[in-house]
Length: 497
Image (cartoon, rainbow, N blue to C red; front, side):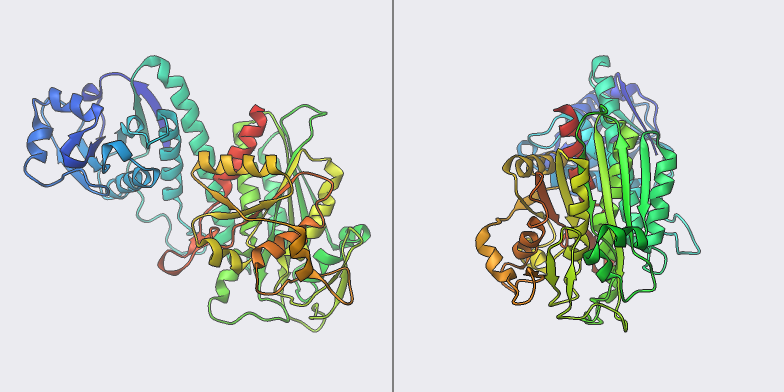
């Protein structure tokens, strides 16, 4: 899809479909009022017949309205004018896409930017609309014989802005929304791929392809022998039972000064998780291909940052492994030694995400990072606590945690902070090693993060548990691409600082 921005009289613009907003009680948006005047009250007359009152989710397609150059006019319900929420605004964009998917319109002129949700401005509304459309264009048809069904005929969306001075900021908003949407779609594609395709080696190959696409992006892959030399016994232990070799993938984007400290993203890349010897129940195990969505979000964020050419140094680290049961797989009760030298008693092999992450977090020290955020589908306990709406967030630095929270609010991809503290260390005690890899049922998300905190003492760190937000189940099963918007916004904010 191509995204453009222009100013001028809405009613005189030639387009296949003009999109206008209508609030509850048939109150017209400003652009709709202009069109109504040009058509000598046709919109008011049509709405007066009762086919639409402006409630959220409503739509009405009109043809051949006099006094207007557009071939069609699509009216979208926006609910209450004084309390337009982000959710309702996004629903309107999704409705627009759905209607256009069955329309013959070849191009679209959209005025929704003027109807920004409460607390947002026009450029945010344009950015979010572009992001939404890009993600709606996504189809996972890589493994299907028929491709790209249900896509709209329109190949171009133009956003109207009031004046010529508003065009440049609007174009910047489009550029950001497009990068976000593409980054989310890359994360979704990697997440949706089955485990027999998306292996640790496959992820390493995709990283190399990214490195070839973008200047300033270099990629290094460590194989099992290299990790053994570094003493990454914890990461390697997860892949012992698999025929798929583990990998540590390092992507470095250098858009900032040579001496500028980089920000780091560390994404859990367990490409399939059976639970290992602590085998998961069979029902729903197919969804454990999504256990690498933390890694996928790092890929999506790196791509978006490189597309935007942000003036910052960013490193993405992906510890990738497959967790399978086998004769040489790690067993409950085994003791392993991490890269940090700390020993871990593995009480449950299904708590493997923290085992791959802890060595990657130790490896992160060598970059002398300004901040580190790890992203992981880590605990089912986080779903119990927060459901499928907000990411769980914990960390060892209040400033970084607050910046992550602020980025989530700006991107409408929110996180919710949970506590950490020494009192939770009691649950990680082991009689035989420095720590156990699980802390019991109580506060499962927190004890998992408390485990990771033991490997992050040399830098500012935050942890995002995305177990409830990284994918959908049921009829709409598939990866969501979250938290790419939050992460990109965080990096934008740090580049601005």
